[in-house]
Picture: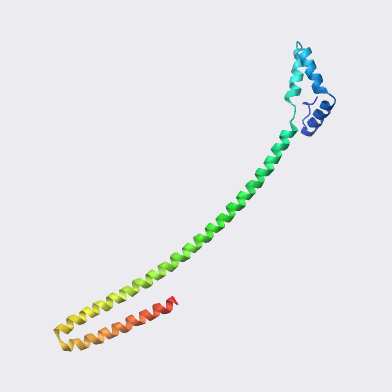
Length: 160
């Protein structure tokens, strides 16, 4: 009768009522006294096999609730860490852009310095060859220095 119901609540209620009325003790006595009746032993075994352990189900329910809480906490932690990672990644991209800009400035300054050095070398060669060429070389060197100075001022103004 207990295991014929498909509703779990009804099965538990019937099981509880039969236990209160002493069916469990009576079935134990029957199984020991009438061991030759297979039909009776079969139904007694079916009753014992279909007993529902409510305490076990309750414990499982509590564990499930705890695990769901843990899952929610882990998901929140995961979400927070993803946000932190995205922020760090954005900061890295900004720093890379700044370093690339500084690299371009340094390359342009290096090119200007190399040009000034080549003008100075040409001036030294010309001064050794003739005094008239020295005057025109000085004019070129002055123009080059003016251009280098203007580039340096632009670079400094850009850094500020």
